[in-house]
Image (cartoon, rainbow, N blue to C red; front, side, top):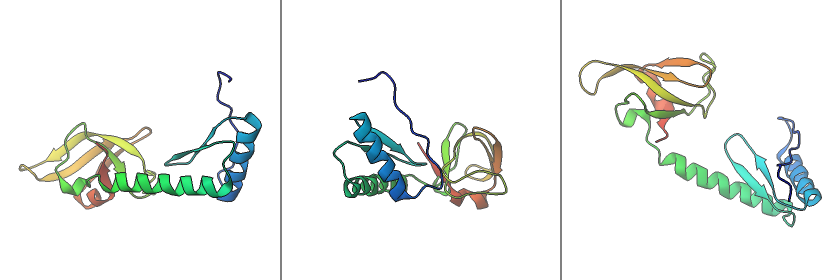
Length: 142
């Protein structure tokens, strides 16, 4: 086995079926497993896998991720504190923050205990202020 991971250029707009076919071809040509990377999950494809097996593995992985994520509390469930890691649940075009972005709470503007006016979240490329009305669109990651 090689010390490198082979990569295959892919197009964002490629169909799921096209992606599966490409992954099956790569697994057979490399005679080893390949990994399909999506925005939220990764699925391993072995040389003997057929399209139905790959699709089933994808669906099962999505289901596992969904169960894990639904167990994570929303920011409305408890008062945020500095250092909390949060994830966005929706695309926010006004702040150019996409669904699934992960950030860290860097500041909390609070009044009385349990009363938060604003939180500041630092993402990889930007800092965003959130007010309580936005908290329903944020989830704690840990």
